[in-house]
Length: 117
Image (cartoon, rainbow, N blue to C red; front, side):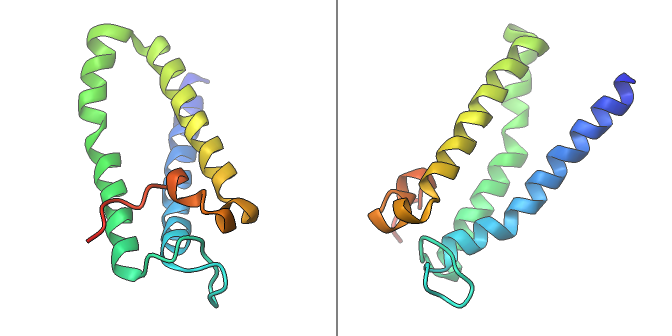
């Protein structure tokens, strides 16, 4: 049962990660009134830059966090902390992606654009 639970959780994590990549790209790249609606209107190159930076962080951050977890926190406590961080981030992304919030300019702090180039 534990193996199936771990496999199901791992599969759900991968599905959610790969499922959000296109959504992030549309959200960042397009404006609300474009043919494919988005929110922030960054354009293709800046949206791709932010999306790729997110991908790099997703693949690099497990190393330092695993050192922190194994050395200090323990698995159960780390799972509690990082689940809380993930849930708060999801709530922020959801709240700042509502149409009324996008029009008022709150979408930008909810999903940081990165430096102006």
